[in-house]
Amino acid sequence: MNNKTALLIGASGLVGNLCLEDLVASNLYNEIIVVSRRKLFPAHLGVTNIISDFSNLDEIAFQIKADHVYCTLGTTIAKAGSQTAFKKVDYEYPLKVATLSKQNGAQKFILVSAIGANANSSVFYSKVKGKLEEAIEKLDFESCVILQPSFLLGKRSEVRIGELIGKKIASAFAFAFVGGLEQYKGIEASDVAKAMIVFANKRDEKLIKAKYGDMIKAANEFGKWHSA
Image (cartoon, rainbow, N blue to C red; front, side, top):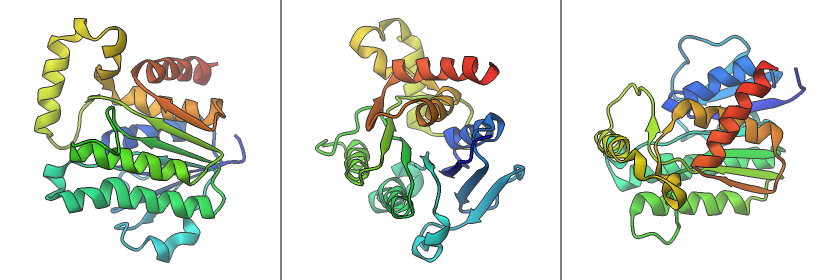
């Protein structure tokens, strides 16, 4: 086991839950910290669970400390209820965690963003994602990893209508996602989770922006490397 600490936010989501399982199984960290709105169930051995609704992060700033910070926090405008509420979850909270963790000495920040993220986009969702990417890059971590998946494949606890429609379309026209369109292919959430861990532990570039092909390659590497 390495003498490193990982911190994860978004563990109750599709990618976050899988990432937590892989972090625990990987034996790469001597401590794993999860910040979540509610207690993790079932509890994971060796995981410190900090309960927070993310509005009081300054009060627990001393606990937002790790070598590697994994961020899978995100929602939809429909679930959040408004653009303002969406921005809190997808921009304000991740950026606050990134800022506090950087102040506390974090070396790497690994963010699940989205394909099409662009701070200048006319699409609100893409614009918020793009602004977050830019803001985190400016924090100047030793290494910043930004994963940009398209549709996430896997079983969610809640139904996302737009995502379901997108998955059906992506499945029906999978043959067309070649060349430059490959980045828009749906990807298994488990592959995104594994890719996060590989990029954090096997790559040291200042900035990594990973799309479909990069994530699939890293996920395959996780399987070989973890079983070795």
